[in-house]
Length: 163
Image (cartoon, rainbow, N blue to C red; front, top):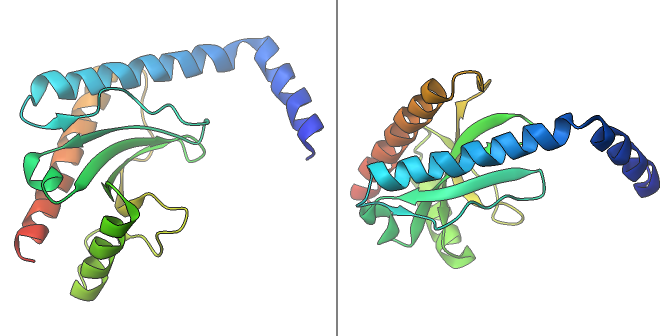
């Protein structure tokens, strides 16, 4: 599809109004999710804002001190095209990302998906936490995201403590 055709389709979809309503609702939910983590876990580092992306991914970081000290971070991510929530271990820069990617690969640890490259990829590890989110019950969704994110963090901290 050409750019012109894509823009015509975009305009057509926008005139229906559902995309704007859904996107605004998702961004409002993501902001409230970030605020929930910020208030509930004051000892963790939570990004000051949400990265909204280009309708590809939306995320914020949520990292305990043990992970942040190693120049790593945890990202809670909504991937738009697969319509799912993921949690990622990522780094503050490509040098740190490369270092930990090598550590994970060399260790043989296989609990979570390890990125195959650093080129065009922000994650070191990634894990699907909600494959089919129910936006009809946001409280339950928030609790699921919280529980599965904390499990991921515990596993990563345990792994890193042995390195």
